[in-house]
Length: 488
Image 1: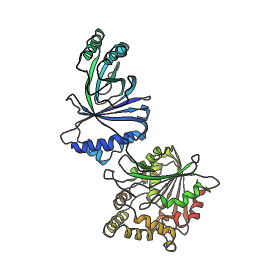
Image 2: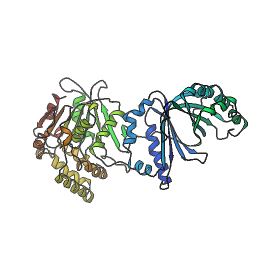
Image 3: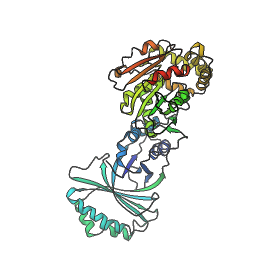
């Protein structure tokens, strides 16, 4: 599919559909998510004005139908929010059709108070006569009906519940826009339906549908905070993009309880002095859950975190990252991103992480959630940061910065993120990975140095950072930059 088009969706709520929840979902989530995409030019909801079913429709003008086959759009259906899944499960029917633009008559810019939508199928052999009738007679006569604003014609490209026409047939949709007060029951409209040419068309054309729709609402694009993108299911990804736009992009992914500022020194070095005489553009972001966790968001898992990064790259216009670099939870995200989206990166750097959750690890996360709920995030932050940093550095400026950062994290977001850390196992995918990787670990990070050397990942090298623990870039910056320089 390519070229300008039209997306039409008709919904019939069911007996179990909560009307208030239905409209809240459609008006504040479903439609606005689509209007945020640059290729969706307009979107409107209509209510049946003819007492027929389905009772509701939504229509969107699309600049190029090719976009509807790309991940930036298809993910809207593949990654539905909990709210969307709950509401849609109650529908009696949902019919979705995609059309290509054929012609337009009239220059109405505002959504029509009333739409008359007519669908017909004809044999290929009758198509030329059918189109001539529409363009040379029927629309001319309809345009004389009082209240007429515009007529558009479309050709069906993707069928809905009825599917595509049988081989040798084609389906057309005509959408006529009218004022609320109009002459659709008057003599001009009747004259348009009572011509010799019209009677000839009815001898060979098959009626599919004829509906009247009253305008209900125009969608606005979903608002996003500055320097943030909202995922399909409502998680906020606050990001920072710095550096020369012509430079290759390195993405930095934070650990649980931290935000993008754990990479401040690394980002500054990559952007200004660079490595090996080469500078880079740096994209940093807060993984879902650090500052907020929307009630409609799906459970946090590493597949979802990898898809979050894919979406962020799409929304920021990065076709392919030179490298994705993550630490701890971000390290697992980097590995899983290389597994799920190998065409979106050249290489990855995974720091201080594992490739599967253990039973002991799962138990520890549960205890940490209870600590945070009973004694607050400040207490959790204190215990955690002491564990992350080696004894000589626990009073360092970076340790104090991390302590403050962790204490300000969302408790519920933290609890959701532990759901990812307690429920993952990437081992079966490691042997088939093709993306070159670098594994980095602080020598003082418990058993991880030993564990990371046994991952068995092809095309991967291992580097250990002296005088550092779980966040080596914050304890031994020079050692960390030296480790990644040759790999980058």
